[in-house]
Amino acid sequence: MSEGIKLSDNAQKVMDLIASMSILEAADLVKAMEERFGVSAAAPVAMAAMPGAAAVVEEVKDEFTVMLTGVGDKKIQVIKEIRAITSLGLKEAKELVESAPCAVKEGVTKAEAEQIKAKLEEVGAIIDLK
Image 1 (cartoon, helix red, strand yellow):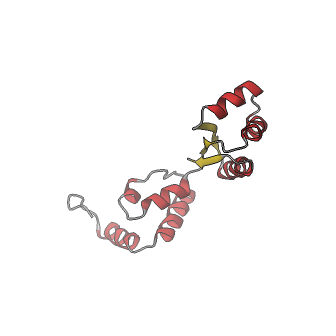
Image 2 (tube, rainbow, N blue to C red):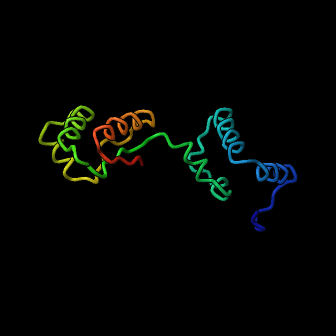
Image 3 (cartoon, rainbow, N blue to C red):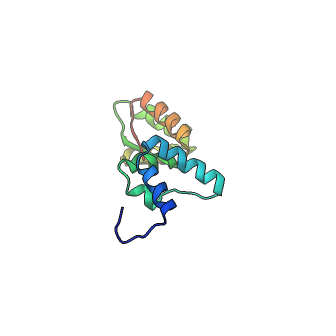
């Protein structure tokens, strides 16, 4: 804890208790506090100072970008799958595939991103989720 911040006895007890928690316990606490107080802790400053804070922030992430990083041997099948996923025309889908690495779809849920990734990897594409 920083020496410059003066906490009440109760606040110090809470800080000591939080510091002794596992990352999963701390993540559950953050979720419960968000629900109870109607706030969002997308990038909480106190959590960033804790070891393993990246794991907590990762759980909060709810939008993903599907990145095409490679095409593989089945370029035509990848183009067809890109067309089905994005509703692009043939020319636009071909240009997207040929410009890899590039974003296929942005701002999608984790479930949708995983589905897109599975479909594209099935036809030989190399995909990263960001």
